[in-house]
Length: 183
Image 1 (cartoon, one colour):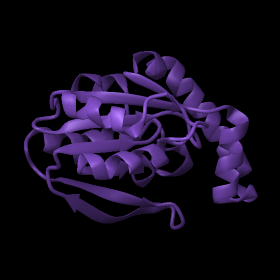
Image 2 (spheres, helix red, strand yellow):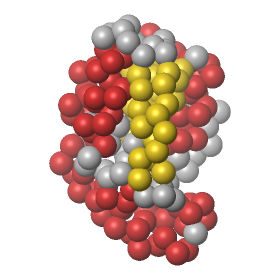
Image 3 (cartoon, helix red, strand yellow):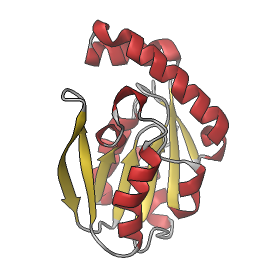
């Protein structure tokens, strides 16, 4: 498994493909370790991190996130303009406040669906993080609570279908084991 330093070197060595931004997509199923990896990459890359959890329209928002990501974040950055996205409030069940960020040297987009085929030609690096389903479910329920089990199981089915159609794992530059320790 590559180290964080090796992943950073890989990103820095790749050309910017989203205007002058190096786009890093950290994709994979829920509970696999994507957020942990994205957070570990942020500081050494001087990267902005966008968690797709802020853009999904709740538990049924996997397929609808692509348009918001494109319109609110990727298109403006590709044109050298700051990004501005509206955060989804999972508790209220509605979109809430807007967040803005300047054009970063590196943008790490973390979340299931971040490395869709439609984004592939603009990504400097695609990382796919995976872990066994039972591990992912246990992590999710530990974080979100047992009351959300049915939502988690439904989401896991949606993301499985998504990855089958998109071929995300097969197109990734690097596939990482989300159960292994990052060094």
